[in-house]
Structures are given as C-alpha cells and as structure tokens.
Image (cartoon, rainbow, N blue to C red; front, side, top):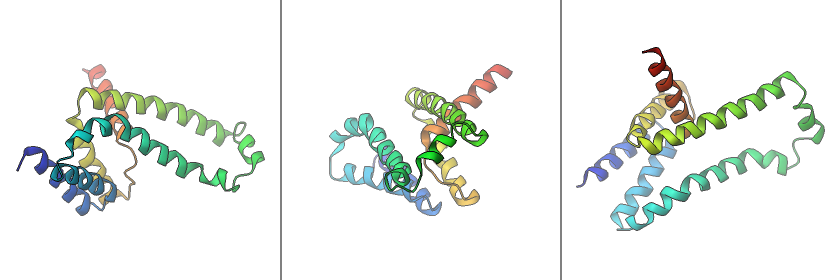
Amino acid sequence: MSAATVILLLLMLLGILGRSNIIAAAAAILLLLQFTNLQRIYPLLERRALEAGLIFLVVSVLVPFAAGRVAPKDMLASFVTVPGLIAIASGIIATHMNCQGLELLQRYPQMMIGMVIGSIAGVAFFGGIPVGPLMAGGIAALLIQLATWLR
C-alpha cells in the first residue's frame, strides 16, 4: 500500500470520525480514482476542481436571489447600512485572504493535512462547517506573516 493511499485512508477515517462528510467524501473519491487506476485525472482535478466547487458554493448562496426571496430594495439598502458596508468590507478581506491561502497551499501543499485536521477538529468540537481550505490557508498565511513580523 502506497503512502498516498495510507494518507487518503487516514483522511477519510478522520473525516468520518470528525463528522466532516465533505472531507471523507473527497478522500473517498481520490481513493476510488487510485484503485481504478485513473490517476491521469489528477492534473485536471488539480486545475479545475477548485473552480467547480466554488461555482457550486456560489450557486447555493445565490439561490435566494434566483428564487425571488430577496427584494431589490433590500439589496440596495445593504449598500448604505452599517451591516451592509461591513459585509462589503468582509467580502474584500475574505477574497484577499483566500488568494493568500491559495498561494500558500500551492507553495506548501503539505500544510493541507494540518488544515484538514484543524477543520475536522472545528467540526467535531466547535460546530464548524468545513467550507474553505482557502480561508484556512489565508488565515495560516496571515498568522505566518504575523509570526515572521514578530520575530
């Protein structure tokens, strides 16, 4: 059994034990690709799976608009209220941090294991929702920069 298979099995087990269905399912899909000798799909997944996942995430968030459950006047009001302006600022900060997270994970892919374990702990012990390795990477990048600055 290869080291990659052991790691994926461990991640799947941690996902199941930590009640993180997303992580368990992702590891299971990669194991399935390994066992069916379809590793040639890995480069495609590496390039495009993140985009596909983000598309589905954004679609799920935009459904209330498509379903007409958010009135246009409520949308416009969000641009001039304090909570609305905070939401805009949060979006700017989050997207910048996600970019930093992606760059960090591309440079140091081995950090993903720690983020997965942290995500599982967040789900299991703090009621979190594992939606973003990029945000976890962004926070890690920020904390690494802070630690470097404090040295």
